[in-house]
Length: 226
Image (tube, rainbow, N blue to C red; front, side, top):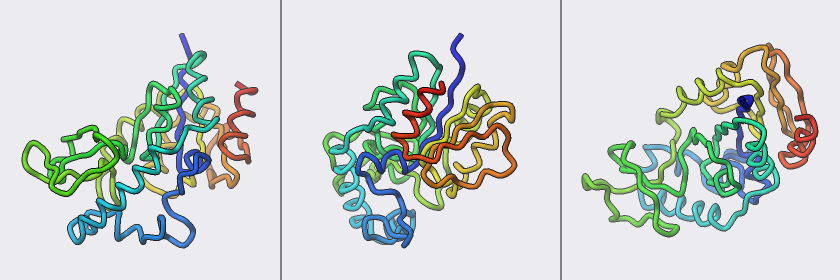
């Protein structure tokens, strides 16, 4: 029986494919204040702006390619039962070949009803147009969890972490909750590999192995260990 290998990924892994991290140090995302494009209030105030913003992000995602870190994680499935939990809204893990990916914050290549979040549709092309409606007549919006919204996959993710035999953290600052709390569900006896040029604070955890490198270089090193 294969060991359960659980991976939590953040913006750092996607950055190596050319996708900008969610928030730069100045609090902006592609030049926009996140509160103007990534909250329910922003959508209520100016849905056209929010829709246009995510349409542009989606085009960037669709032209980006998975990098070696994504591909090496997919390769681990030959030897481990791999479960990836990602904070990223791109589909690069899937395109690299990973079969079991849980998206905490949604996935930008899908649309959802603006009234019923459980109504989710694949997007045909790279845009959601104003006037495109769900089956109940509500405007479609990006399938993305915004600030102030519940994270519906967090309980499932916590269960996955609790069942880990090996845990890997890649490219996340552990600054965004509730995702940042997932590492606390990993059993204390389990080895926890953290890959990041700037290792986030993880005081109080046992069996932490720090790899102070980029996602790709860190994964190459980890593959030799595993």
